[in-house]
Every structure is written in C-alpha cells, then in structure tokens.
Length: 138
Image (cartoon, rainbow, N blue to C red; front, side, top):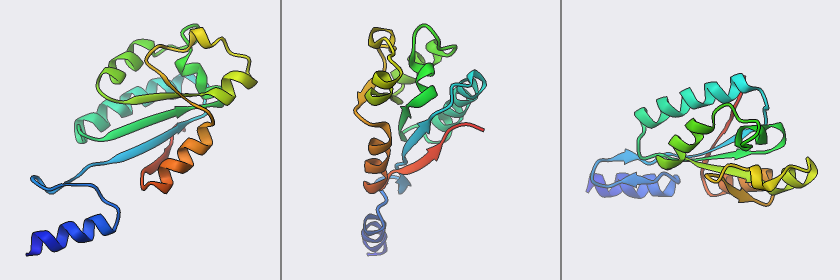
C-alpha cells in the first residue's frame, strides 16, 4: 500500500518513477548560448559525469545564439564528443531562428543535431512539461 501511495504522490508531483527500482528518471533541458570553446569542452565533461550518475536520464541541449558554434562543423572543437554523446542518447538541438538570423550554412550543422524553430520556446515548453532547466556555461 505504501508503494502505491508513493507512486501516486510522485506522479502527482510530476516525477517519472521506475516502479521496479524506485529511481527517478531525470528529464533535463539545457540551454547553451555561449560560443566560448572552454564552455563547450567543460560541457562535455559534465555530460560524462551526468551519464555516469544517471545513465537513463533524458537530456536535450538546445543551442542558439553563439551557442550554435558547438554544432557547426566548421567551428566546433567538440564534434567527436557531440557524436559520442548523441550515440548515447543525448539530444542536440539547433535553433532555426539562429541559423536564419546569423545566416549560418545549414549544411554545416552536425548531422547528429536535430532542429527546433525557436530555441527559447522549446525550452519553455519542456519546462511546462515538467523538465528541469539548466543554463550551460560559467
């Protein structure tokens, strides 16, 4: 009975719970607006740590403004890591508004990236759906 009450409370509070293990399933949307390559490199270390601590987490990284540089094949210093983490389930999203406004060459966006029309709106929608928000950078 206590397990059922716990699950009902967790669901009412917006938590996703693995009923067999009683473990939270984290859903995180991360915003990257920095073009600083040190931020990009540090982010890759954070991803490694996050995947080790919560291997089943859902993580989306929304890149817009100067943060789009991380997803551009002619600018990114972490392309190999983006590929590696994309293969492990981390979702990288490029903002189409930024691509248009900065006149970026869409063919140079890393193939591992998906697209959203407006990065900020996607982040807000995820938060409205109960995802945790993290701003990347220092």
